[in-house]
Image 1 (tube, rainbow, N blue to C red):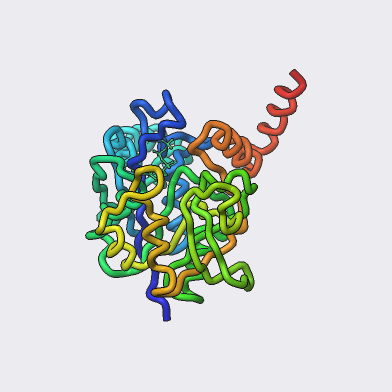
Image 2: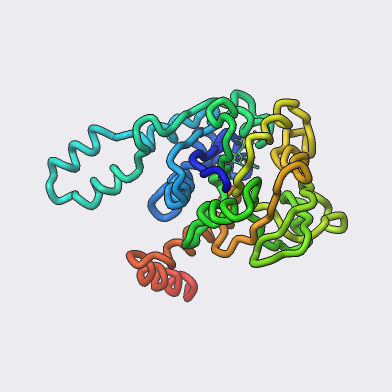
Length: 292
Ligand code: UTP
């Protein structure tokens, strides 16, 4: 039986250069979709998958993330005293993590995603763990991470979430090679970081959600610099293929790349249209704006 996934690594130490100047003094992961920051969506996605322990790999200018998941005593006390702010109080309180369940460690230098995940090694130990890139917003029920955990319970080992992308976009993703697929799950035979469209083994892209086995740290320990001059997580994953179970899971649900401006705008509109409390007003607003 597969070991239960209890911990998640959330790498949030990137520079966010595609979103400057917004990310000059503020973490990209604190950008807000409708009314909550991206990082909160990632934490809620994990909680819905039964994962309750978090390792945040942070960098400079990321202090707001730690504060976000703490209690805000002054705010909460003021809201409680006002009596008519019960909903708002609940919203503020909901954005916390149980005491002792979050660790914040610094990457110090943004040497790549593989290096960021490696920084979490002591807190993960020798058990399977989830990795989520919080700038990718996933909207689905069950959550993308819950779908991965269910797949991991079936197959054991490593499982990564994939989606089809247009061939001309393969150079922006880790692209997987698979054997025959059954019920959305396929054994993986390879993963290549950012291949040119004519060299990509498929159009199935890794979308920033995985369950990984701790052996990935044995490869990350070597600090091998790969594509783009960075220590790549996908390249360490590739080394595990063939040594232990490694599957690609076709994710079904909405996916928004909030690391770029258009994806972020799309996420805001899509989430607002998908929520009961904001749908009709958003639709009316869009119609008004489109009429010009
Ligand atoms: P991105 O590839 O989006 O990199 O990283 P970035 O630096 O944040 O953004 P751009 O490309 O400069 O605009 C995907 C995820 O990996 C984290 C990022 O914070 C983001 O959540 N990351 C990336 C690290 O934690 N450390 C790194 O060295 C690189």
